Amino acid sequence: MEALRASYAVPSLNYNNIIPRALNKCNSFFKPKFMNFQSINYHKNKSKSFKVFTISSSSSSPPPPTLDQPAELETKTPDNEKFDWFSAWCPVIPVCDLDKRVPHGKKVLGLDIVAWWDENESSWKVFDDACPHRLAPLSEGRIDKLGRLQCAYHGWCFNGSGSCNLIPQAPPNGPPVNTSKKACVAIYPSTVQHDILWFWPNTDPKYKDIIEKKKPPYLPELDDPSSAKLIGSKDFPYGYEVLIENLADPSHLPYAPT
Ligand code: FES
Image (cartoon, rainbow, N blue to C red; front, side, top):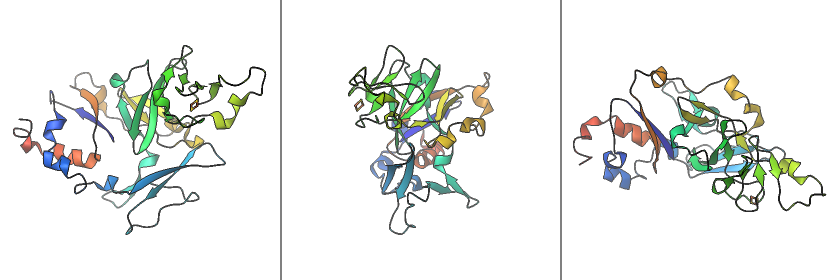
């Protein structure tokens, strides 16, 4: 998964080294609750243009939700409340790690997404990383001369709203097939805060303006110029709980990096 790190008063950390090798080799043994799922499946709702998530859990767990029963990826809090990972802003990547000239494919919360810079709206967009035509990864496409996200397979072009602006193969005098809802990409609400790109991991249109009701967690230190800040990103093949446990154990630092 894509893990985000922000470190203070630590000039540099080599996470490859400070994660114990034994831990790396025993991912399945230490597999955190967050990753304790056999699979996460995504279904296109045939009547709507957004996705429904279902999760297959272990045999001892309750049966997975159905299409009629909105799926949840839940974590129990200390108060035994349920935390729905798909109903919360999620960091994607620091903006400093993004190149505006190309689309960026990421896997976050098990979702394949593509982040790209929409120069027409001067904002970062987060789309489902699947072209509505033949499901080619849009992250392998390009930003065209008009600032649209263009699929590398047949050249369909999408604007920042996910609408298809161009189907090169469509006859000029034919029906405007590009305006069909089936030609639209599923888009995720996104925003930038603390120089980090965030997305709301649900493409249901009812969350389109979620930023007006709920914002990502605000950490004043990250906007305080008197605070030291080191920010970057790295892909880790395990859940965040393993990393947090490791960072909360500083006594290994004099030994593990050597
Ligand atoms: S798969 Fe994207 S344009 Fe055909």
